[in-house]
Length: 382
Image 1 (spheres, rainbow, N blue to C red):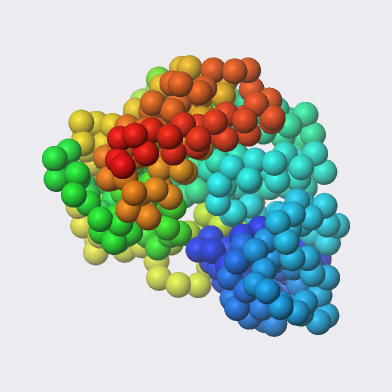
Image 2 (cartoon, helix red, strand yellow; image 1 turned 120 degrees about the vertical axis):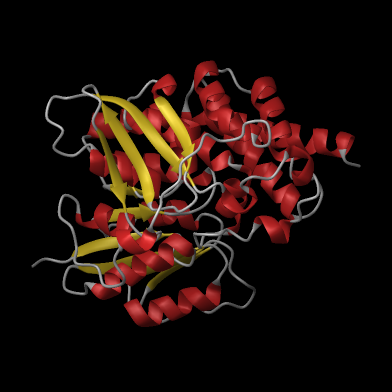
């Protein structure tokens, strides 16, 4: 069996480390041939020692860093784009955080490199652009987010039957059931305590504010060519049903599993096959009752912003994404309160979004939305 060579762009983060777990479990099938990290030099060096990639990169190197021996190495702010130009891999897992993933995904698709997508921002900020490139080049774009992987799995072998509705599930984060008034005093430490999933800081805050569902609605609309009015969000606190698809005849197919990101990562790596993953299995009897409810949009107004961004079109989703990223940074540094995240994000989206979508206009909308948030935050929360 010829090994598939995989680039892990974001190898030291939560998704990257779990992807390497999958590679380590199937050494005859996969090789981590390129590893790229942001600033976690110690973890990257450990990964290089363990997986022996052909190439590796570090975007924010410390002073005095010596390049590791036996590996083609690049350090500096252009490391991500450098990684996208290398020729030592057959597919790329894009798990970097932020809108910088958009340019990387576009470059990989232009090179006909299959993309395993764990970067929400690429599709949120540049959905039509990214999907157009994937179609034009005939290059696979496989979702890694648990919700979109679930929908993708449910849509396999559907024949000529179109999906009628997509159902995205949400854990509700650490504040499910909280009132809008109670959320005003939330501290970053509280928001980072997700009840079900182990994730990076940014996506954990997005889950707490439920902004992640707004972003996932936009992703789903593009990935599955689904009108936004046919995409529903339900809170499912057990995180057992990862999402579902309703068909024209009323049948609903759902993908269930334990909250373990290695499953969607492995499915994207091995598609259309499945790997015999080690680890615990879902015991439905032990899981017991499963609960579903509609999100409280009064306490969590971010949920509806994905539909609104799609309605506005153009660069509105890019502005939404950039504003939210900036708001998360401000909240984590205690410069704005938790409810300001959806408030400032919506205002920025409406003020900045609207131009026709190109790669450059998406990045410009992202820049302007961030600047808008910083200015308004200084005015409202001096």
